[in-house]
Image 1 (tube, one colour):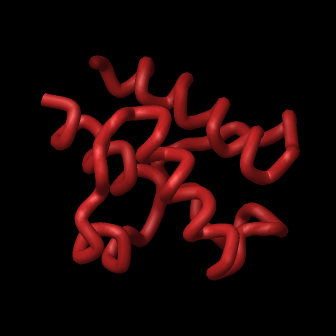
Image 2: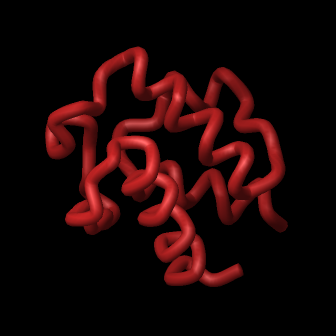
Length: 80
């Protein structure tokens, strides 16, 4: 999977979780950039990402992610 393919799928997940079709992710996107992204929605987001990409993200990686770019890095690492 390419980084672009991961972003395409991840954009769909974010739009679904946050019910916002205007979301356009990039490497620097953080919770501060999306109004509804709080700690509760972060859990829902991680579950939705795991479902979309068919793997579990280790908790150690979940708590250290600083932005969407790091999430994509994890997706690409776990998908290989």
